Image (cartoon, rainbow, N blue to C red; front, top):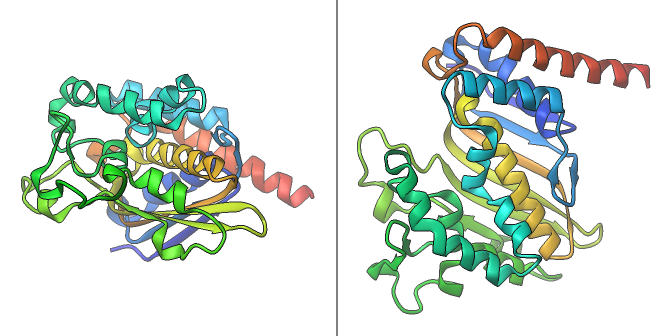
Length: 280
């Protein structure tokens, strides 16, 4: 087992690049635990290094894996939010109406649901759109929309412990198959600072497949954080992810021949940043 590791970078791409290079060198390509923290955001989400992002997507496509954008959409559907023109109710409704279709598009991967569905409709059967009987009535605030609950509560004087959202549900997820595909993301917390008008966000993963899912996960979470911050009158300033076991076994890494180009893109981005810092 590898030693605990903390990565702190100025943007998402650099954070993922450092984690990727570290996992390549780690024994068994596993880091446990890993904390990845990064800053660098604008109104739409995280700042990125286009060369790293392009290299990741090229390697994913060549390895017959989902794109960064596809993975990010499972946590926050950015396109639907833009189409809603700032109307949160319309945004949530459009997603929930389409959710059974999203599940049906890839039932082998989405059988237990999607992350954003759990975040805004915790008590819903995502395959049918029907409420789960054990969460009927007033058992869930705002009909299980945890994101909306956080936004409404995120005001000066709030108890920080109230600003959290769960994905894992023991009543569903402790009874899945021996090798479950969902949910690796367990829990999210939000920490506002009203003096500086900023919001930090923390996410907790039991395990994560770094190459296959990591970049898209970080992107989706950052977009979710920017959404919550913006709707709360704040600005997202940091995202930190605690991963119990960050893994990149050979079967989950880039296809042969694609890893070298991705490694070079990561190394170049980190070296360029170190040079800039050193020059300053």
